[in-house]
Length: 521
Image (cartoon, rainbow, N blue to C red; front, side):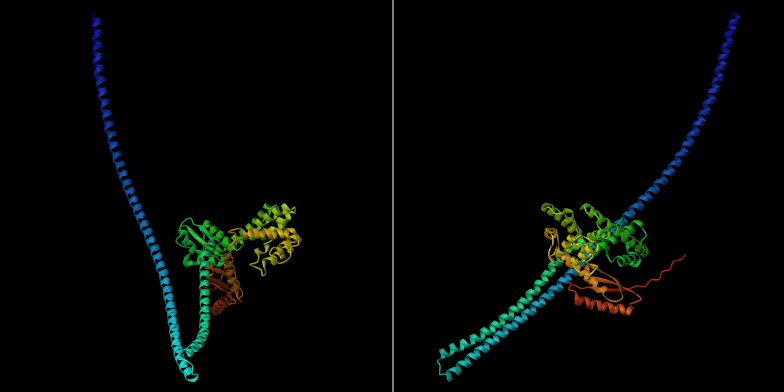
């Protein structure tokens, strides 16, 4: 019994001791946990302060960036407004110039009307003087007849009136004839002016459509690079290509103007290459223009080969195929010569098929009937004569040669195919809207302008630009001095005034340029 009681007491003591020890251990752990929690809280507070400072700096930077963007946007809007104001000012100046010209024209008309009124007053005064002279003459003759012929007053009056009427009839006929001639001359002059104005107004859209190409720019900053420092790049492009560059307010675009389609296409390709390359300077311009010329020759050959293939023609000389490709860049009365020739070839082939003739030979004759137009601006002679020479040179069949020679009635047709070619040519040309005579005259005038300039000694090359309002002439510096260049410009001006009929004025610019080039190695 005592042993059991002792065991219980010992157990109780052990339990109490265990509880005390456990309490102390728990107290130590709790204190450690509290210290760790305090340290973690301090770390979190410190990190929060650091994050808050970072967020504050970030917010300040973003606020500054937003302020700068807003300021840039305001400056861009202000620049755009200034550009719009400048454009409006230029338009107002242009309108004022137009109004001034109209006012000047009205003043001239008023002066002409005043001059005519003055002449009419003089004529009225002359008629009144003649009437008074006639009345005095009647009185005088009446008195003389009464005294000499012993005639009655009524008989004398009748005789005098009869003679006077005859004289007045003659004078009236002369005055009427003079008035009619003067009116006819004025009417003819006014009619010519009206026709010229109508041609200029109606031909503007046609000329712009066929003599202008547009090159797209990646941005408007590229315009300044194309112009170059003091305009050296744009002058180099115009000098090398003979094409006029028009850089205006049109956004992200440059307009190329020139009457020669091949030159214009070469200039367009070269400019596109320069824009893509990014290096724009005179030496690079000359390199790209020369490269574009070679590519244009290859393209012309490919166009000729494709045309011959599409029509099913074979065994044609390579040089003749290339000449066919050149027709794609020639026009006749505003009609593309290659398109016209292909149309004539197809029409001739269909007509030949209906009549049981050789369809392939008919197509060949139809395609080549205007082949001379591909070189008629480079070689003297009509396109018929040049076409016959080309066909003979490249050993075309006699039927084809005769079709070329007779399609305008210059010679008699010797085959049915020749007659069919002439008929197909008339059908294609007579199609509504196919041709425009005003454009052909315009192009011929520009070609004549260049031909006159090229006819002078010392001229290296010349370009008609600004729609024929200016001709730029490049002379050989070794053959023409500065003083001789001035005399040459005057002589060209005199020759142009003598040989050409043109509206407005033509500016003659003679350029004498010397270059010295060395390569450092």
